[in-house]
Amino acid sequence: MKRYLSRRDFVKASVLGSAALPLALRGQAVDSELKRPVPDAAGDKGLPKGRIGNLEITRLIMGGNLIAGYAHARQLSYVSTLMRQYNTPAKIRQTIELGERHGINTIESWAMDDNSQLFDHWKNGGKIQWIAQVRLGQMWGNEGGYSQIDKAINEGAVAIHLTGDAAESLLDNGQFDRVGEAVQYIQDHKRPAGVAAHDLRVILECEKRKFNVDFYQKTLHPADYFGGPEQGDPDRVGKFDNSWCSDAQAVIDTFAKITKPWIAFKVLAAGGVLPRAGFPFAVNGGADFILVGMFDWQVEENVKLAQRVFRVASGPSSKRTRPWCRGNATT
Image 1 (spheres, rainbow, N blue to C red):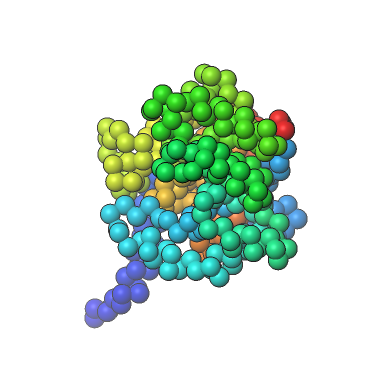
Image 2: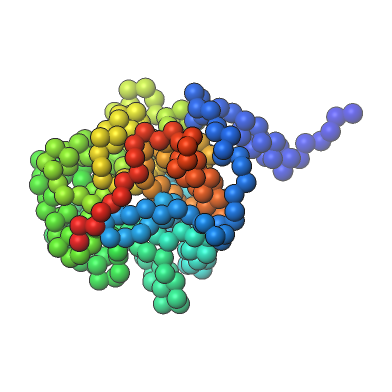
């Protein structure tokens, strides 16, 4: 007798089946240490922390896409709208509260996003720190050279970095000196200053010019995921907004020689890579922190997984390719 397969059963079976696929895991053994139970996020140890400048930051940082309402939808045009419908102001506030309750002490978002839910969280006793992304004036119609930096400072950002697209545009247009000037301006205002990039050339240029950057933020993710980049795709974010790290090994090799703290972002390729693969890939690859966008229902599991991954990466069976950076204060 044939059993009727409901839509719900089909979805459940499909998800379970896809979990067994080796996408983003080929050539990687899942360390048995990752399967060991760990204390709840609210336990004694909680999330490990590192330093950026004079700040103590959890090595798992909450991404700001829930605030921006933006999703890398690839060919699915409705996804960003769906995300905004789900992440209402109340849901954004709830997600931030969940993150802090489970031990995340830092969130990152663009200075020009509607960060009012974060500010309301602070007004009601929340302590989560804010790293602000900024662009410079005369780019994309922004007013004033450092208006976004000033806005971030005035609104309570503890650290500030130039966005990847901003730094890449300045590099492409022969204006890269402005990156160093922006870093100095941020530091003059007593904030750790960073530079982000999708394109590894930005990091190499900063190092070549010996900019006094407090931290870098660079994309890192494996490439073997469904819908990933095609071979030879030259676009720094993928031809279909589907790839943000064209050569992961080159990134890993470059940062092995850099002593500044590194926040890895797009570690899940905007949902293309499972956390169980993306977290250890980034941490073993040398990232000191991982920046992860998450919905409310992902917070607890992401925290627990990050605890496991960072514990293993700090233990005797660590597979990290570089030492943990201490992030000595420059301000």
